[in-house]
Every structure is written in C-alpha cells, then in structure tokens.
Image (cartoon, rainbow, N blue to C red):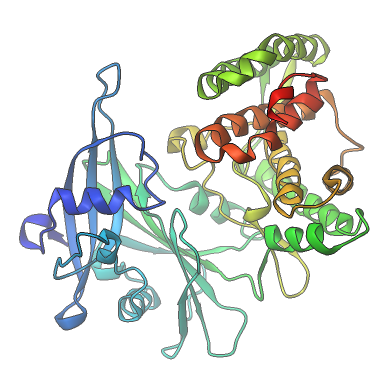
Length: 439
C-alpha cells in the first residue's frame, strides 16, 4: 500500500467537485470543507494508469457547530487529469483494464492493488477469459458481473464506496445465512485496517451471481403497465412474501430473536414522526391524528415486541427473479443514510414487510396505472399471504405509516411531484381528509 504522499495527487477541489456530482455521496446539502487522500494503491501503470484511493471528507460545520467526517473508496485515473466541466471523468471504475486487474487479484484471493486483506468464505473459481461487466446504472456502490462467456451463472464483485468501521452488514449477514435459498451467498471479501476510519472497514465483497436475474421493480412495472387483471401480479407478490419469510427465519436462527418493550417501539414511531414533520411541515396537519393512532396502537399491543436482524432497506429494487423463477433478496447493507452502527441493530421484521407493501404502491403509480389501488391491494394482500400473515394488522399498519411518513419528507425535498403517493398512504391508514389541496 502506498501512502498518499507518494502517489498521484488530486486537489481537494477536484475531489470535492467529483463528490458533489456523484449519487453515492449522500451529503450534497452540506458544504465540503476539505477532502484529503489517505492512501493510494496503483492498480495499473502506463497509458491506462489508475489507482484505488481512500479519501477523507470533512464537511462544513452544521448549525450547532458539529463537523462530520466520512470516508470513501474510489478508483481514479492515475494521471490526475480532469476536465473542469466534467469532474466525474476522473472516475476509472468502468475501465475494462482496471476491472480485469481487480478480478485477477480476487481470483488469486488477494486484495486488489494490495489495498487491504482478502478473506475467502467459499470456493472461488474465475476463468482467465471471464466476461467482466459493470452493472448499468449509477448506484451507491459499484457492482461488477464476472462469468464465463455465454454463461448465466458466475460471481458478482461489489465495491463499497462509503466506508465505515466494522464489517458491512451485506457481508456479515449473507455469510451467516448463505445456505438460505432466497439469498446469494458470499464467496469472499476485502477489509482494510484504517486508524482514521476507526478500525477495519469493508472495501469489497465477492458473491454468487443470480443467474438470468430480473429486477423485481422492472417486473412489477411491466405488470402494472400492461396487465388488465389487477390480480395478475399476485402470484409473484405471494412468492416474494414467502422468500422474505425464508430470509427472516434464517436471520432469526443465525442471530437470535430478542424483545423490546412496546413503549420503546411506540416512542420510536413518535420520534420519527417529529423528524418527518421537520422535513415536511405539511405533515403537521395530521400530527394529532397520527399521535391518536399511536396511542391506540400502544393500548392494543402486547407488552413485548420481537426484534431481530433484518434486511433494513427492503423494496422491489432489492429483489431479483432468477432464470428458474425463484426470488432472491439482495443488498443487505440497510438504509444507506444511517450509520453502520444503527444498521446493525435489531428491529421488527415488519419493517421489511412495510417496505415491500409501500414499494407496490410506488410501482403502480410509477407505471401510470389507472385505478392503481386495485393492483396495489391485490399485491399487498398476496405478499402478506406469502409471508404467512392472514392480512394486515394494527402493528403492520404502524410500520407502513412510519415508512410513508419518511417518504413524504424525502419526496418533498427530492421529488415534489411524487409526494401525493406517500401522502395518500398516510391518509388511508389514519382515515384522514387532510391534504386536499395537494391532490
């Protein structure tokens, strides 16, 4: 590993411009005070020179004077050239030669460019003539498909861009439940010990590739757009519910189940309501009605609520349909905006269930379906059936409401034209006539 002082230098402004234009950088609303390179490891030399770098980002102080720091892993062009108008040209993550160098290192069970330490979990066999392809679409991480020419099965290499101390939940959980048929098992991962980060951080993960995978979001959109029968997608939704239940049972067996007092659960709902109102003041119109709902919830709940390790960010985009028609859950990192320490906490499995129920709602509206609620209700009922629930309940509704309130805050600040989707869910659950001026 090379210290940054002996590697190609990039100016703090170059790196700040790159971050500000990249989806994986989640603090775009906060100014960047400084960006420093901690380490750089040359991956290729010559005309195709590039290097893996670790950077430390220091944000401007917030209103309370607090200064936050974050850490990222990037693959950057080694000569440091960058067009001032297109700072993202500095990224070399899609360069075929760079990808092949990374894959070659993993095939030898070594950390790419010697940056970190590779740990093998399962058998790793990568042919020298493997096809290597970056998954299309800008994501929070970089994912690379590795397989023999013409084959459907293979491996997927995922680079985690944002780094935090501790084993990434994607690696941790999938290593524990790799035998579950509804997940893609881990074959290996790369970690680095970095004092500035606070310990060991996960840089990359190598896992099984889901053969012939189709994104459940795209499959659902196709149904919502083209199927006249609103129940046409119900069978698929039921199967996804069953797959989710399989994963939850596997996680419960691997990590145990605890209980928390119902008062703790309800207080958490109230705190997130307050945060949602700060993000979207329009929700103040229904604050009293939501609090009444939470009072009724606390009266009817048992004293203790079961909690366990969960997916943490489950929606249609986190499920794949394999070539054989099986549904597989992916991306177990949890909510990307939350710190890793929070993402590893146990929670009710119903939070994942609520994420899926809300995702059907979004799919129907994104598809522009006429009378979308018929399709949505059929999918939601089928998912609950597959999961093993006879139907919704007050606690399920509470987690769906919690998710919808968060979505209102997100949409108000990012996609205002979509805000009616979660507002409608809030109204349906609490039986409110509010927000008439937004319809």
